Length: 193
Image (cartoon, rainbow, N blue to C red; front, side, top):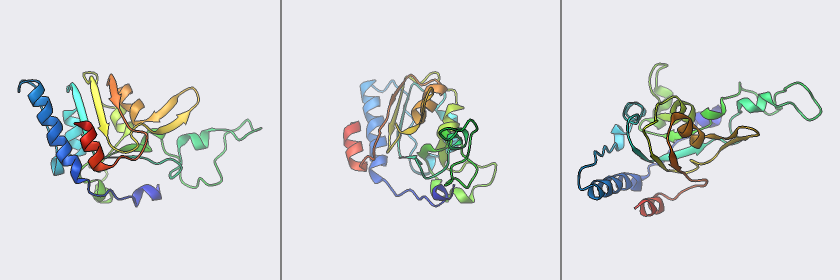
């Protein structure tokens, strides 16, 4: 979708401090016995998350989250019949092929602002709900998404909310902490402590 392709993610310096502080709290609480892996800066890549998240007990992501509500067409836009019609029709405002609703929400990781340069077989720095749902996170007891709009998603009758929360749940994570609104970087860091 064109709106997403032009979207850029601003620097959030407090998120790096948040990651270090949360890691230090976990190490202290476990008297150093807990294995804590902290990925910040260029190390916080999509490939590193996909490789490292399975098998972890707790995940904490301090980054940008997004939900493209109304900005990009959803697969549900094309599948719902208009009132009084038996056949599904495309919305008059929908001109592009509809997206899977799980592609409309995600988190930005290292390289997200350079995603257009990624080749077809390369990670683009955007971890979508669709990609998360495909992971095995059955060992994850807690997933904390310290980012904007991580609890938002497309609401579908009979399905619920299709977004990051659903994706982590499908992947096996048991408990999620998310946000339904924009989160200030520094306030999020303070709250996470």
